Figure 1 (cartoon, rainbow, N blue to C red):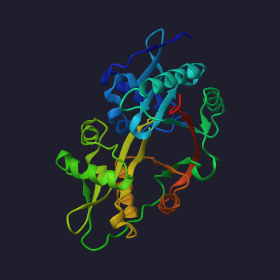
Figure 2: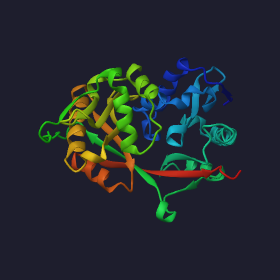
Figure 3: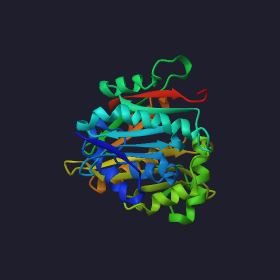
Length: 307
């Protein structure tokens, strides 16, 4: 099969990029939440996206240098897996090129399911190393799933706290400040967050915030919904967080449960969530509301700081 790389042309390519992994949900970590990831400022530079197509122009693989996450998102049609070394060669060249710019990073990460042996082999051959057992800084992830059949418990909030949808773009700046505080990162921007509100997959009713008694935003939970290749509606929670000032009061469980209920009312047959394996509190929370592990996710890293 002849496969060639071409340049990213912006919005006309985005839908095809979303559709490709949805046809192979067992092979891909990010499917339902791609509109959130594709709204990031990484895609403002077309050079951060690589596309690979067949002779008829059909998209068979893509990669995105997701600078805000320090992560390369890679999707490949099962029949085009032989092109993965070429994709990783492009990643390598792009990572080195970016070192000369403000968005250059000293290292990049690629995620893969633990059972994807051919992908793991290609990553190792390209110089990426698993972070699953590197001592104190070991890093791996898990993908969890919750079926629609499991009942959702309603959790009460502390007095005078409320849960409601984000007040559209009028509340973007307040959300960005909260997001940055929760994750201790400045990667989230007003334009990124505003773009999520404008994308066709955004559901205002599942874009939730917690409001504290003093009017401050205390937490957030965004639910996404898409259909897989069988036509089943699938939900995904991304992101979820509570400000450090308000933790320990059950706010995360309450807003997550409310978001789950709203996704199920919209027809979700199951809901996915991804988290770091070392975050015991997050794992306990997700398991307590009915999520169970379906995939171990390995994190591979490659250094570029001293190239």
